[in-house]
Length: 441
Image 1 (spheres, one colour):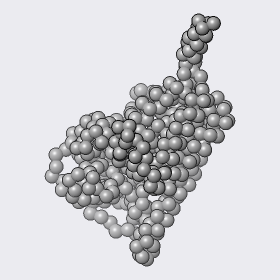
Image 2 (cartoon, one colour):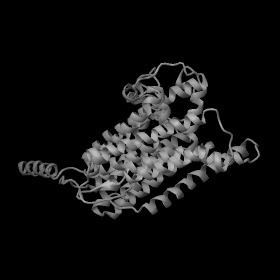
Image 3 (cartoon, helix red, strand yellow):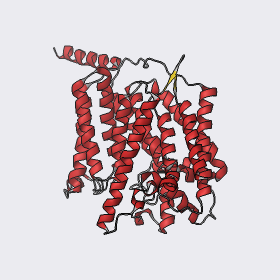
Image 4 (cartoon, helix red, strand yellow):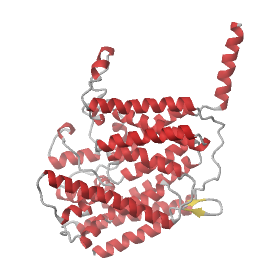
């Protein structure tokens, strides 16, 4: 059964990759795109279990069959969503960017990036014991505005996305205009940002910075399927090695002898989906279905900061961790368990909901991707930022993924008005300035 499941997922990968090509008027080709990453990321998270069973001889669990059925249903939904787009909607991409008559301004771009780097340094120094809240208190700000844990601060997520947006927009603008100085500075700032959060153990934020930059670099460039497989294998073994090193490090801290289990992919990042599914099956199943709540209302709830709404209802992933650990409030959680898109579909509509939910999500990814693809530099940045969001969908709930993407769109669109003003706006400002000077003379 395990081998059959692995073969089914390989068949899913082959079929979905064929439907993941970017469609032009007379041709189709592979590009680094959200639809491509959705297929690859879902496949990688799904095959951690069979790899563990075949190569590490891990113990079979009671709910393995149900997990296999759920994952295959999810894969089927993705294929249906892509097939609808491919056969019915037929989104095509133009070869040229949409003409907007906009100008890339170096100074505002550099200014925004300096502010972004300053935010990172504030967090770094604050984590080392510098109390910046004492500076802000006399001006009426809460003492929680800047804290060591940015995820618990009032504007934590917004500050991080301001940094990511400003660097990403500056990079895309400099790359499109061949401005090497701003390009190098944006890359330097991106490395500093990513290294800081990697050292703090926040791989997610580092990935949200580096992955969109990689996508922006390969934007509109064809990629051969062979290179895709080689790159994915290298990336998989890199993440796998990091997980092994981490497990061994924890073992040494706890004086635990090194065991074969520490090399098992189910004990690492790619085992999140399986672990969440098993824990969910072991919990009390006599609960009412959410009937789409986590895909609709929870997204709106998550847009309200917890500091403004302390009793805000928890999202699906947080509620799952709270139920598993038996706590009544999110502040009592020491850490989360991650989440699974399959489990989220199950708690909303049961097994019957997996295929339509996954099909709609796959279709949504292709629609948004096609819409952003032919836009300006803001569209390129939004297109690129979809990729880490698609990856996150495999490990967190939809509400958090949607919240991060919505906030990014608002922030990046606001910054793009400053960094990429229209020629009409520039000419109007110059006209007002010249008229004012003429009046003074």
